[in-house]
Image 1 (cartoon, rainbow, N blue to C red):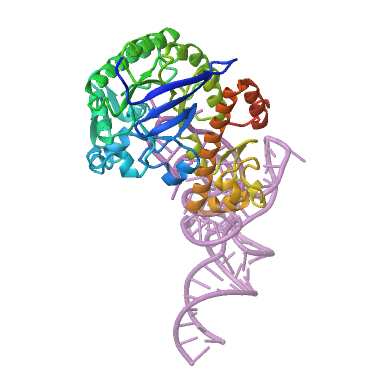
Image 2: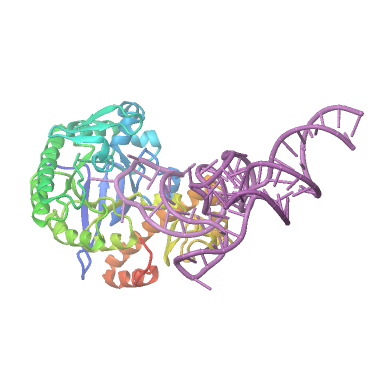
Length: 381
RNA sequence: GGAGGGAUAGCGAAGUGGCCAAACGCAGCGGACUGUAAAUCCGUUCCUUCGGGUUCGUAGGUUCAAAUCCUACUCCCUCCA
């Protein structure tokens, strides 16, 4: 096993669950885990300044290979001195490989053993992304953590197809590892796939852990399947991953799934949900979802969340934020984005504290109760 | 005083005898959103006991049938005096 530039240090495991408290060290600092990572696809967490992300406690953010490759192009980012310099963010950066776009742009791409042929979503031009190309681009972008180029099939894909896909993703992972040019400064993660099939998840985990990745992520979840299905898969998948490396559950960002994921031994999460719903006028609060753009808040002069200490909640009211959003003022989107990110980062902070104190189950119970997950027909993420 | 144009649902605006409870846009209301083709998308907005009932400035009329044709009236706009 070589020395990776990204390392995991386990501090303790919660007494009653599989939850892990730890630290991940990257060339751009150390952050505590479990951690939620804000998503900044195009080298910006939409509407947020890096200073604000730092202020709210983000230690690492995401960006995206496919999107940056198309615009502005990997060479420009490289010439700028890499992503950190380009976007003025000196903490951790993780780039997704473009694997998710194999899923989300499914109707304009074609998968082959060599790689994936895409149609650019920007101008329709023909593109080709391979495991080597994805690594090559990420080497130029210069994130602390790079992801292997994988295929993320739909959860309800057939066993036969999923099996073929898993095997190909494993081969792609190995090819990516070989193509990696900066193993001393950038860590590369492998992505476990396999849909809802236990033996395929096992196969995928076995293939990938036989290779020396800096960390492992669990992909192919949170793609529309019921939460119980995701938890079921996590139950048998996280135990397949090495104890001494980071575990990253991709695409998860609902409060309950974050806690459930932590209890099953996950260290890192990312999700566009908090920032996307924020831009669409919805917020997460300790009392559950609050659609601040709704008429009910027109004359509500309380903060979004009376238990929140974020910049938004310390200074602005629901009525004002609703007004801004209804008026399409960008400041409104900033305020809700700030709050939602703060909410999840703060949630993870509380989760870490609960692990430290061995009372994660109690914490979960009271959080769920407050948030409204225990109510029968509660509308919540 | 004279000549012409116009009044359509919350607003703007199509429609000029039947397929019109009336296109479309906006505004309003609600919903969706999970490794971001998303500051996007979807639904809905006369009343209703869901059978139907009342609408297209107002009042009459023609017609089997009128937002659409005719008459009068009211109001608005433009031009001329």
